[in-house]
Amino acid sequence: MTNYVEHLQPELIVNYCKLVIVSVDSPMLSKDIKDGLGATFPFLSDEDKKVITELEIVDTTDRYHPVAIPYTFVLERDRTIYKIYNGWWYVGRPTVEELRMDLRALMSRRQDWWYDKTPPPYAQKSDELPFHMER
Amino acid sequence: MRVDLKPGNTFPDIELPNHDNETVTLSSLVRGFPTVLVFSRGYF
Image (cartoon, rainbow over the protein chains, first blue to last red):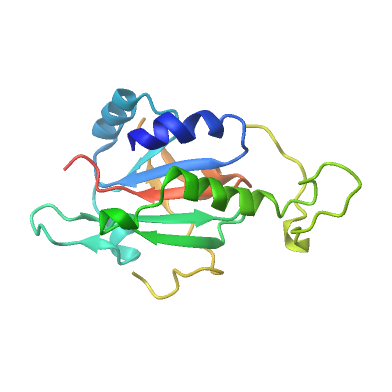
């Protein structure tokens, strides 16, 4: 997580993309971790494991302390799943650079990606969403 | 992992308390922006 805080977080301020963390930690512990890291992105608490159970991503390796299998989902602007990383093996977790490439691919689908009269090469009609840039 | 969680399908609009113990939906956080959703092992 520190790599995301150090290298991805500064870009999130300007890149029109979001980062959201989910864990089974309590909201209070999540806040402690968030503040300890200096993170500005939101941490969600699935303390009763309801969501990770529904999504069938519970790691029961430690049967006394089930946690989420460390999946990372890259979502399009309408929550369509673009890419899934399974980080059960540490090496399966996405690097900052991989996430940057994924986010670039999604942003480049915008009709205004080139911000001039040139027809954007990757634009999709379904991505013709209005500007609503409030953050 | 649930079989419908695959590229091209819509991720469920999950609802959970955030770090301030305020219940939020994923859609309220995404708000039309590409989003990286990380399921973390947490502190444990």
